[in-house]
Image (cartoon, rainbow over all chains, first blue to last red; front, side, top):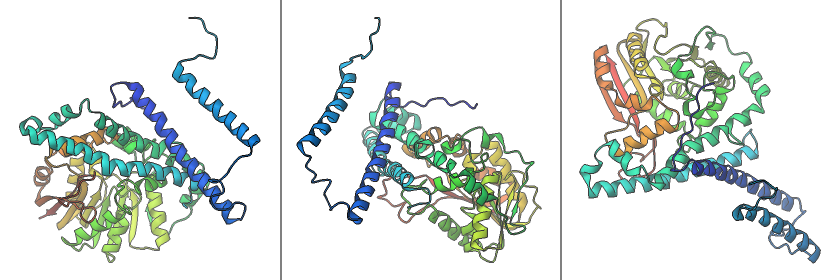
Length: 92
Length: 353
C-alpha cells in the first residue's frame, strides 16, 4: 500500500474534512437538481404535467399536513446537532 | 448526453463549473492580494518563500489550495467520478480495447517494467496511475478533456503545438515520446501527413487506446510501441523530429537527462527535439502557485524540472541551438490582460548539429 498522507490547508484539520463533506453533498445536490429538472421536463413533454405545475402546486390541507410534518422532523434532526442533544442515554 | 449517463455528466459538470470559478475568480483574487503586498513592499516579496509567508495563514489561499486538490480528487474518485463510473462499464470497454487491430499498428512489450517514478505516485491523483489498470488509458483520456478548463477542447493545444513545430521544420520521420493515448501523435500526423509517426509510451493501457483511436480513424502512417523514452532501443539517427508533450515534468531530473540524451542519439544531424512542458518564469507568485500545484496534484517532479537548467543540459549533450519560449495554449492566453490561472506552458526547441 502506497502512503496516502492527508494534505491539510486550514489551521484545523476538521475544517478540511468538513469541507469535503460539504463539497460531496453540494455535488450530489446538483445531480439531484438536474434529475428533478429532467423529470419535470419529460413529464411536461409527455403531457402528464403543465409547465410550472410543480412550481404553482398548492397542497390540500391533508397533503400540507404530511409535508409540514416531514419538514418539521427534518428540522428537528438537524437542530439536534446544533443544540448538542444526545439521543441515547450515556454515562458521563 | 455522454455515453456514461446523465448522472455522470451532471456531476462532472458541477466539478468543472467549480474548477472554472476557481480558475477565473479565486486565482485572480489571490494574485491581486500578492500584487498589492508587493507594490507596497517590493523587497519583502521578492522570493517564492516570501509569497509562502504571505499566504501562510490566509483564508482565501486555504480555500484555493483545498479546492485545487479536492476538485481533482472528486473528478477521479467522487461518487460519479471517472474511476467508479468506468468500473461499471469494465467488461464492455475491455472488449473494445482488446478487439483486433491492423497488423503492425501496436507493438506491446509485456516484459517492460515501468520506472518507479511512474508507478510510485498516483500522478495527477489518478488512483492506480496511468500504467496499471486496463482501463487507465480510457479514464486518463476522459479526464484530460477537462484538464485545462478554459479551453473549449483540450486537444486544441496539441494542434497548436504541431503547427508551431511546422514553423521550425517539416519532418518526415517523427518520434512522439510519452505519447499516452495519442493526444499529440494524431495532431502531428495531421500536420505532417506525409511523415511516418511512431508514438512510444510505457503504458500499455494508454497505447491500446491510442491504437484503437488511430485504427478507427483509418490512419496508416502512425504506429505505437511500448518503450521507455530514456532507453528506447530504437536505431540511432533514425528520426528528424523527436517531440514530447507534458512528459518531462513526470520524470525526476536523472530520467529527464537520460531522455534528452536518448533524444540526441535518435535524431539525425539537423533534426529537431521539441518538447512542450511546464516551466514557471521568475515571477515569485506564479512560481509559488506552480510548486504548490506540484504538491497538491501529485506531480512531484514539476518543481525539480523547473529548477533545471535545460539549456545547459542540451548544450552538454551536443545540441547546437536551444531556446525556451512561452507557449500560448489558446489565443490571448499570454495577453497583457489575461488574469485567469493557467499552466505555465513552455516550448523547448533544440537542434542537433
